[in-house]
Length: 378
Image 1 (cartoon, one colour):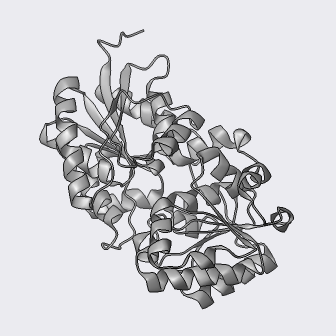
Image 2 (tube, rainbow, N blue to C red):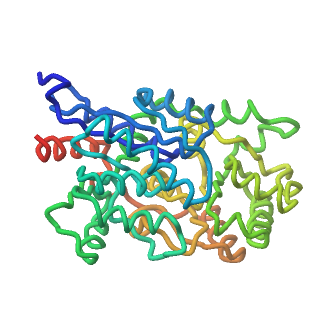
Image 3 (cartoon, one colour):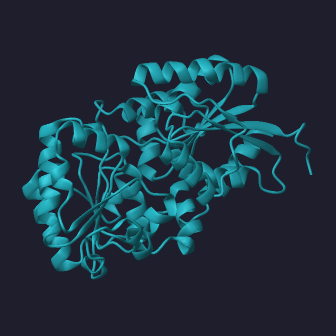
């Protein structure tokens, strides 16, 4: 077995909750017995809730980060700059053979920029996803990270098509599947039953309301929550839908801030709309797999619902994960109340869209990544 000193060092970066689910299987695969790789984990602290970070790391069995930059919240420019300032000395000290970034958050582009300017190869997991919407900060992060990456791993066939269109060398692109689904399948048997989750939070609302079926809601995109008019419209739509099927709504901290700032807390108190605080991964997985329908603006949840075979209504005008629509259970409904209600009713009456699990969403994407990285670096 190769010693850690002679192994090729891969510095893996996480910064936000979606990254945690993606990095867990990658770290396991890179550090698996027989690999000639020494994977180190760095947490930028972009999502800075200590309790939530602890919950995710424990539930996903992610090792404690070797380095925690503790950046915290700020504007996109300030946060990206601060990550870069704090990441550069780490690269100088650790001298990694490659920096591996996942997804599309500010930590992804910030650390990739530092690495490439220090002439350290960049590996991008979940490359090639495109929504075509340049108003989304994540879209900018995706496009730029892909342009400066040396090794790009895609989750679906469309990813490679997008990259080739943008001039990326095909030799750098590898279709490996979806590490989010690796995590889902790895943890599915340990998902917390929905009744165990909601009984902790239900006060004055009968649990029986939800025992005959429920919908799950997540909402956090700036386009949906920052504008009080759009947020008001969406919340009133959810209240209306909850009369037909009770809804469980774990509320993102930023979304709750927007709700309070807009004076819309009263819309969260309906008998059939259960607002919960942010939940750990295993709790969310339990809620998702048993839901009759999921309404979301999250890209990751579009993927997870497709893997689980649960109908998903995406509260956006586009998606960077088109395979969830063409092959999976996802339907794009935007923020128009009439369209949302029409599709929601269809799910209630017919059981919703029936899809299939896309190619390579089989729980082994991280193994494929580790094999390519090992052959490439060693």
